[in-house]
Image (cartoon, rainbow, N blue to C red):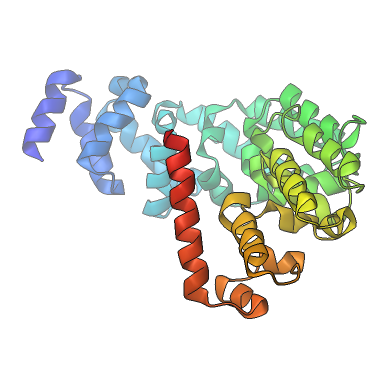
Amino acid sequence: MLRCGRQLLTQHSSLVVPPLFRLAQRIGIPESGVDRLLRRAPCIRERNAQQLAETEELLRAGVGLRATDDLRSAVTASPAILCVDPNRISGIVHSLRLVTRLSDIGRCVARAPAILLLDADEVRQRAVAISAMNMDAADLVSRVPKILLLDTPSLQRLFAAFVLDRRGPLLHPGEVQSIFSEFPIVLSFNPEKTVFPLAETLRTRLGLDPASQKCRGLYAWPTSSGTLNAATDFLVSAGYPSHELADGVSLLAYSLEERIKPRVEFVALLGVPRLALSDVTQTTDLRFCQVACCDLDNYRDFCARRRARLRSARLL
């Protein structure tokens, strides 16, 4: 530890690094993590021991990151929060309480600590924008605080892709709120590459309403459109009717190369009748073999040889 400390002291201000080391020790950040914090947030070099101690106390007592694990995770995810002026943090905390109607907003910040890098006005304005989209801002921010990290124009474009644009699924605002809450990763998607292609695939390839309940989970995957198209092409060529694929559309999200193709090809090799879509997708290998009346070891050996052939083909 001393050797590591000396190395860092030669690289950074000798007045700043020791206080940061002490803070890191208190919240459980390893020595190797200190240098990463400094690289990601050089502003920490300007903070003295008293300032870091005051910020730590504010994050614990004022923000609500009382548990050391929560504080460590927040600092590791967004080290620049150690540089934010205490008055600014207090203003953000006040805005978050107004927006979420929660007295303790520590859980929100723990899940999206970069919120503390915003301005108090930004927090309120983004919440107002969410409400203007006919979504419950208090509920949505409480469930998915990272939504506040998305600038208003980007959120409006994503919302419009789901609700207003005819290329999208044309959902109701409440349905979009459910998708955002259940699948927060959607907030990072480019709708031109995700929402629109998926809605088009569901409509044209499978004859489905992209707003239907059974299609909702597919919006959580950035590659859903390509996955569904590839699975549909293969299964139709294998004799599965389109209406059966549409009825089990969520099953088409299973891995084509690791699950669907090996099972369909093995069934064809055995010469047994085509199995139900669920049997070549969601069942375990054991259950699949029971339905196909085949030996589990034989099937696994077939899969191993198939993978080896594919690897060899890729190397050519």
